[in-house]
Length: 541
Image (cartoon, rainbow, N blue to C red; front, side, top):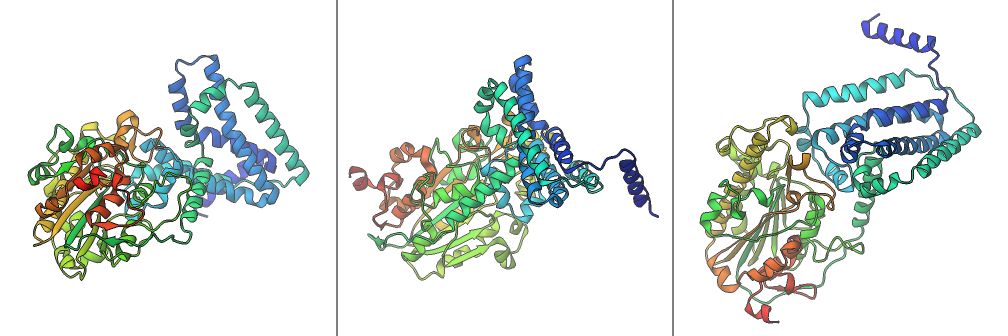
C-alpha cells in the first residue's frame, strides 16, 4: 500500500471514529460557514479597514457581512439539495476549486469580480492567462482548492427527506432575514459599498456576473443591424490607420506632461495629443464596442449595429484588421490577420512584439484596389501583469524592472519602470507606423492612436484594470488620444482642436464619426459634432 493510500485510509478511519458522516442539512450549514471564513478575507479586510476604529456597531456590521455570505450560500445549496442530494459533494468541490482561483486574483491584484472583470476573464486568451501563473499561485490552489476538495471527497453525506430539507431551508431563511432585519443599521454601510462588496462575495460574485456578462453578450449576438448606405463626397486617395492601444494610461506619456521622456520619437514627428480623454469603460471588450459604434453603447436600448470596420468595408473602403489582442466585435472585413498569421513572413527579434503587425504593411496597402484604405492595428501594448514581456531587450531603458506577475511583491519603482518601458516601446511602434504612412506617395494619410483603457500600478492598492467604472481611479480611465496627419491630409482637413477638446470626455465615441469624416464618407448616421476632423465649413453648420 502506498503512503498516499495509507494517509487516505487513516483520515477516512478518523472520520468514521469521530462520526463525521453528516446529514445533508448539516453538511450544507458546515460548508457555508467554512466558505464564509476561508474565502472571504479580502471582504472582511476591506470592511475592517473602512469601519476603523472598530466599535460595537462596526463589529455588528462585520458579523452581518458574514451572515449575508453564509445565508446566500445556504439558500442556493439547499435549492440544489432539493433537486438531488447527490449533487452536494460535486457542487462543493467545484465551488472550492473556483473560489481558490478567484481568491488568488482578488488578493493578488485587488480586483473586484463584477461583470466587467468577468468580461476580462472570458476574453483572456491562453497566452495571457499563462502570464498570471507563478509558484505562489500553485501553492494557493493546492491549499485552498485541492486540499479542501480532497477532504470533501472523503465525507459521507447522509440523505435526509425532502420535507426536512425544505424545513431547514425555511428556518435558515427566517433566521438569516431576522438577523439582517435586526441589524438594519448595517445596511447603510453595506448599501454604500454594495458594488465593491458584491464583487468579493464568493462564489456568487463570479457566478452571477459571469451569467450577466454572457447574457449581455448573447443579446449582442442577435442578427446584425446594417447601417444605412453611405457615399463619398471626395474621391482622393486616403489611407487611415487606427492604432488601438492596450492598458496605456495618459499619466505615463511625456506628451501629457509625464516627467520621464517616454515619447521621444512622437515628440519629433509632430503629433497632436488630445488632452483629458477618457475611456468608455475599464475593460477591452466594452471599450472596443464603444469606439467602433456610431451610438452610445452605454445606452440600455443599444442594438447590435454594424461595427465601423464592417461598415467601411461595405461602403467601399478596403479594410484590414491586424491584431495581437482580443475583444473586437464580429467583423466583416477584407483582411483579418492575427500576429500568428503574420509571423511566418517576419524575421528578427521584433516579431514577438507589436512591431510584427507592421510586417509587409506597406505592400498590403499598395496591393489594395480601393482609393480608400482603413487599417486597424490592435496592440498587445501594456497589458499586465507581465509588463517586462511586452517590449524587446533593446527597449528596456528604465531599470530595474519587476519581473514577477505578483506586482505587489515588487517595489513600486520597479513596477513603474517595467510599465514605462512598454509606453516607450509604444512610442517606437507608433513612430514606425507614421514612417509607413509618410512613405506613401500622393495620398492623404492619417494615424489615430487611442487606448482601450488605462491601468493601475498600485495606487490605492489597485493593480491592472477592470475596476467598476464608478469606483475606478482616474488612471484606469484617463487615456492617450494621439493624432498624426500628413501635409496632404492637413490641406484637405483640419483638426478641429476646440471640438476635440470639447468631446474629450467622450473620446472613444468620436472615433467612429471622425474616421468617417477622414474618408469624406457621409450617411444619415454621421454626426459632425463628434468628428474631430471637421473643416471650417463643418464648424459653421
